[in-house]
Image (cartoon, rainbow over all chains, first blue to last red; front, side, top):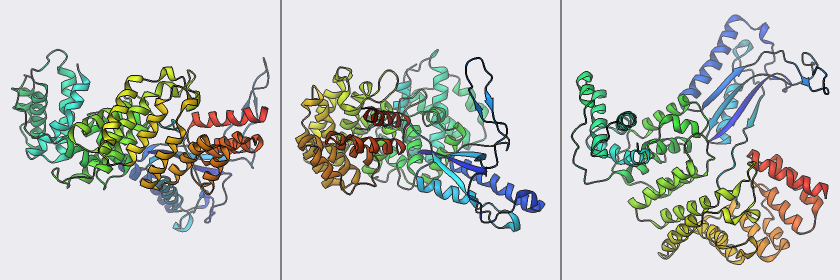
Length: 135
Length: 375
């Protein structure tokens, strides 16, 4: 009854426990990781808790209005220090506790050596409509 | 094409199929199919007996699903079937219990109730809750599997049913179904089927809240607090009905939390202006409510009423120790402002805005903080 956004970061989140870049994993490790993510999404589809999810490209651009008649300012690819979102999934669950449980499960996706990455995921509640009763 | 009639017939038609030996999940599927058929065929060819028509077509659908001779059945559906005799027993009440069964999660119970009791389509429910139709379909079919072993004649828990209906009422609304109005319809139907003071209490509460809906938001969608609402926009017909239902329930002397909440809502609705609100009596009802629930949320709401009845200082004393309750900051901010501490109030309003769970609420609270900071 409440929607949450699960955010996966390329950069900006604290370092995961099993911190080996994906390009140094074996083929089997990558396959196992991808399969885990796919199974996770499929399981949520089956429980009726899945709303949407997409992966994002690592390249992005900041854009800003720079005054009347002037082209918008862009700063090109993000600087190394900036937060960078890798992908997201929207879930619709009964409670905050359930959302935390699912984020924990997603964070346990296997990485190098087949061990869980322990990746940090960001969990953000959606702002909803105000309930019918507030007074 | 009377969609309201169709939907009101849904639970009893499911009940008939189950009574004849269909399992709940298959019966529910068959009735959904029959509803879709009815929407297609009735405008040009209305049946003589709507319920008999639905029972026959749904029963044939059920047989289709369990037998091989589909083709013959489908041909028969094209002509209006002979109406069946109306059944003597109505299973609607059992269906409410089943759809709110304690083995279901709240969101599953809500979805199943809206479909099997409310007669809404999966698409309509998905739109109302802003999830994909496939997600809602999965949720409903899992819920049906969960309760498939529960027999329809077992008595259920009214309190569970009321909680599910109140959840439906309290959701915002989107799509083409007004969930608050739908919840009221379902509670009315439940009140017809069962004689219980808390069912009446919940109906009264919903009517009284719903009556104020037009006054709760401004034209631009922003929230209007109770004290500032244009009482001319409240629905006096719904208020009168809510008060009448409530009084009949209270007269039976079996108080419950919905009746107590409805009594508070009735006192707000009764006041011609915000200043005429009988806060002393509202505090007394909050004391009753606390006795029934002992909930920290009720304690927080009571503090607001105490602040109005006995002054901001008394209200602040009443919120002590409630820091972890949602909306604590908003209440504390309001009381501190009335107590003359604008700087602290502004800080608390800003914090309340950060913790708000809806966009309209956040905008309202951030405006309060900005107003005080500018002053």
